[in-house]
Image 1: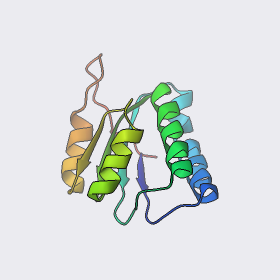
Image 2: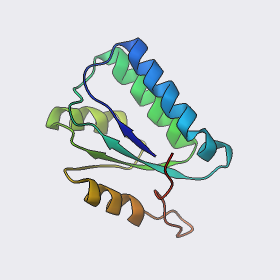
Image 3: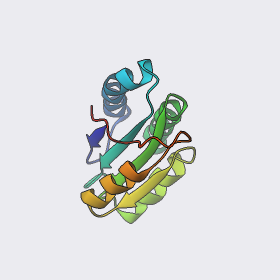
Length: 121
């Protein structure tokens, strides 16, 4: 799955974005297919506590339902620190280059040795 986000969110905007992500991942969740995410966070800024908590909760729920890894491109140093803290239960890596991020996602392996991160929503 791929997402792109920018700017500073209100809680309402964050909840709408999270709802959209949930809808996009439902096919993976319903089929119990592990999935990975590529996120473009160019222009995204660190969020307030309320929004950060909502993002953390969504990442944790997604991890419980098959999220295998998250590759983030274009994040600032402060955003990287916040996102890494929020995604403690999930494999997350940060990249400057989309090609490298996709390579990392595609090289990730689950315990059965099947490649992950190839599906797009």
